[in-house]
Every structure is written in C-alpha cells, then in structure tokens.
Length: 414
Image 1 (tube, helix red, strand yellow):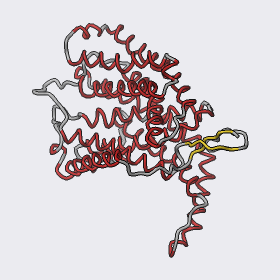
Image 2 (spheres, one colour; image 1 turned 30 degrees about the vertical axis):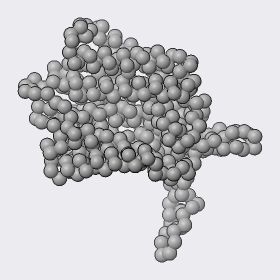
Image 3 (cartoon, one colour; image 1 turned 45 degrees about the vertical axis):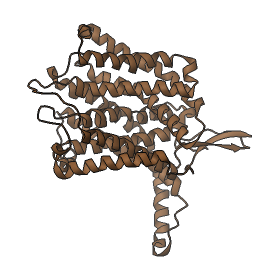
Image 4 (tube, helix red, strand yellow; image 1 turned 180 degrees about the horizontal axis):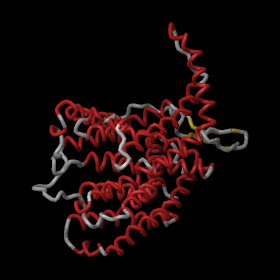
C-alpha cells in the first residue's frame, strides 16, 4: 500500500462559526463600498488633496500585489524548474493569487475618484507612465491567472455535464467546449505560465518606481534609486511564506494533515531569499548613509526598525533553524512574520514615509476605509473556501495499491 495525494473537491461543511463572523465582516465592508460608490470617496474616507492615497492603496493594492506573489513563485518552482514534488501546492497558490489580484483590481476601482473610468488604461495607453505599466500588467496578469485556472474547471466538469429539462440540449455543446479547452490549454499552458512570471516581475518592481517619482515627499529611509529592486526582492521573498501560511491555515480549517514534507522544503528556501533582500536593503542604507535617521526618535525610525527587525531579521533566523522548518506551529509563525514584514514595508512606503510638502495635518484611515479592507480580506477567504469545495484544488491523501506516480503539469497523477 502507498500513499498518493490527488487534488479533489473538499467535502467539509461550509458554514461554521468562523464563516459566520467572516460573512458579517464582509457584508459590513460591502456596505461601505456601496456608500463610496453612491456618495463619493469623501463620504467614507479621510483622503484629501494633500493625502490622495491611504489604506486602500498601501494595503489593498500595494501589499495585496506583493502577498499574491506566491502564484508566480510557486509556478516558477513547479513548472519552469520542474520540481515535481511541489505540484501539490501550485493549485492552492494559483487560487490565492487569482483571488488576490481580483481584489487588488477592486481596490484600485474604489480608490480612484471616478471609479467608472477603471477601463481607461485598456484603451488610453501611456508608455511613459509607471502607473500605466503597473495597471496594464496587473490587468493582463489577472487574465493570465484565470486562464491558468481553466484546466481545473475542465477537469472538474468534463464528462459530468448533465443539465436537465430544456437545458439538456446544451449538454453536448458544453462537453465539446470543455474537451476543446482541455486539449488546447494542455498544449499552450506553458506560454501563459511564462507570461505570468514575466508580468509579475514587471509590475512588482514598478510599484517601487511609483515611490521614486514621489521624490522628497518620501522619507530618506525608504526613498532610494533601487526601490524597484527592493520591491521585487521582497515580493519574491514573501512568495513561499505566503504559500506556507495559506497551506497550514487551510489544513487547520478543513481538518487535513499538513503537507509538512513539502512545506518544510519550501521553508529551507526562504532564508536565502530573505538574506538577499536584507543585504540589498542594508547595503543601500550604508551607501546612502541614511542610517543616521535611525538615531532620531521619530515615527519613521521606529516603523523602519520594526519592519526590518520583525519582518526580516527575526524570521530569517527562524528559517535557518531545522526545528522551525519541521514544526507546523513555528513554520506558521515564521511565515506570518515575513508576511507582516512585507505588509509593514508597503504601509511604510505608501503611508508612513509619505509626507506632502504643504500638508496642514496628518492622515489616519477612517472607519470606512478599515471596514472595506477587512471586508475584502473576509470575502476573499469566503470565496476561497467555496471554490476549494467545488473544484479539485487541495490535495488529499488517498491509499493506493499501485506505486506512487509523479504529477503532470496540471497537478494530477499520471
């Protein structure tokens, strides 16, 4: 007898006390979104001409894009590098990235003044604009993620289309469509995987370019010519911790055994990535001699120290420990610290470090802004929980008498 893990829809019940709490938070966020759409952005936010962006850009967009990096890092590991052992985490990472970018797009839409002009970048191109590059890459990459998800849809419904009544006339056309999609995507999927990885590296770094353009409005601790590189390196470094965090959380929520044989291997890869990011960040500080600002008792210096100490140095030390990478609890804590570090970095860059030259006051997010952000996170979790019950995404252990076979590019056993 041998153990084989295969992706399949989960049979656990959907409604739980935690789901009810998440639903309340989601509906509260949706209510504030509707108020923003009907009554204007000033009705629910503390944004102004002096502070044109805040929590929605710093967290929902900038941090959301970085934390969705698990999609392209796991795709690079599983498909481009052909590390077959990691295919079990590719599908959950793909789903997390797809939902993450979907909510990033929603965050951008509700943040812009005239939200109904969200389609403008598709037609009104400006090749000299860093913001345009970010916007068009996010739109294209989100489309690529949905295309990458299509093989999971065809696998779930192919051979199972059984509409009743008058709709039964659609059974054969739908079945034919599913099989055509399956054949086509199996031959062309590598193109979309490579495109997704390339697009991710482009817009992850371009978010840093946006802050370079802000010039002296950004505190010297964060304002640096290598900011695009730091944004990219931090996104790459948080990719695997985000996959580990999501996998352990999902295992606990659905009562499944954690895939520690995979997650521990991922954990050993995090320390070198964090080390490279830390080396560039501290090296840049030494070259620019901005470490002198750390001696000043300011909010910026405290936030910078917290970002680096809690979000980079501490988890770097933890991931170097074999005991940590072999323990589900400590691996979860270490991954959560990396996620916290990237979240703090984006908040620091877009909110804490940003000071308009003629500001007459400060900025702090309103109840409406916080409610929308929390509501988006809650809604993302609810949608994730629903989709893993419908589609074969999370791998479940099964007993087989035949030898264990390796996985194909789609994550199913050959």
